[in-house]
Image 1 (tube, one colour):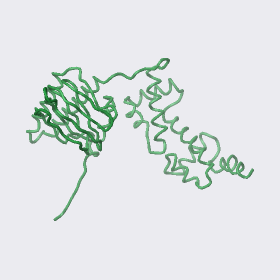
Image 2 (cartoon, rainbow, N blue to C red):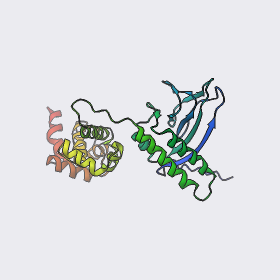
Image 3 (cartoon, rainbow, N blue to C red):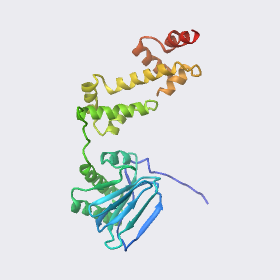
Image 4 (cartoon, one colour):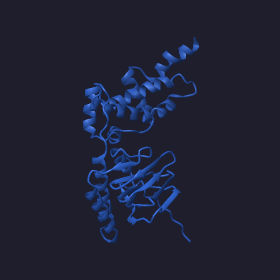
Length: 278
């Protein structure tokens, strides 16, 4: 027998795995268990309990919880007022990004919607769409986008620290992302998506706060890191280039020369090898 396994979870921007509605019996429970995709439960009525490895939450009407891939969770309906909930399981290239906009992740899995009736109706329509044939996938994905949009609108606004503007907070988040991912093939578009703003807006914020562009910041940060690696005699110039996000040593050399007005090899000879000789 031919055994073919295809995993499409991350090849589509957003993809619905399954959805449904359930009126639970008293103390009906599930888990402990893990999922290989994102799963959201939304409480239509009643109450229940959701437990992760680190926290336990009591939830009621108009609230919900997120289960992330690989997370061990347990949930149980209340003994007196068992909940009814709707659920939707999904994955995709942009799933984590949209959840971030809604301020939801493994450490912050609970949400409350602003319009319970509208959110409930949206999920009910999603479940009805499962009976369709030709347009099922498109309808489900459309309703999922709308549902996530509800969660984003209900998400708490970023807290501005004293003395910090919103522009500074966005730039701070972008800089943090660059510092953690400079060794990868990151782009300005990717940084903007992570922060949750448009590329052109991020560029304007960088110029306003730092006086430079995001692309120039990435280049200069990589070159600064490469200078630190020059001290390691085990690494060749090509090794250093790869370590700071440049697959092509020639591209790295051009960037290095543009920033420091000297080639990587000459810089290393003048500032690193001479120092080690002394």
